[in-house]
Length: 198
Image (cartoon, rainbow, N blue to C red; front, side):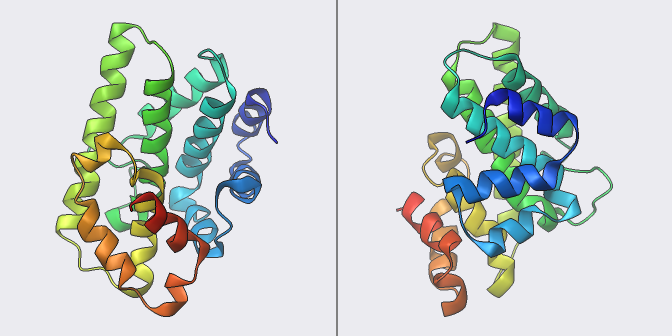
């Protein structure tokens, strides 16, 4: 089990791949598909920081500096379109899964502790922009097969979030994922996703 300071050290050394692998294999999700998608270069930094922040929120009883640092890093990774990741990536579809991970981290960080008003507003605006961005990408998408994997990550990460449910059409995403091919349906990610969105 990783401590907040260990997570902070992984981030400081930019050992993102090892952090994602450690956090995913330690009870998060054992899906090879999810791990592969979150480990691609476009997603890796965002996914590592988002998963790290989620883990810190589970462990910390007060807003530890490592958590605050990760939250601020995620805020800096938010693009103009509201998604999270490198500004050089032109295909928004490559950022869906990592953006959902980042949003879950920010939602948990925002809810877990009292924040100064300016910080709270910054978090709320970032979360709202990110959720709206995912809703916008879904409205223009016609996903099927492997392209449903990032949306399964959205369900897994945000399917039980009241903020996300108010913005993202989770039921239509759930139906699309539930109608996926049998190979995807038997994946650990899909089982987690459909459970969270039930």
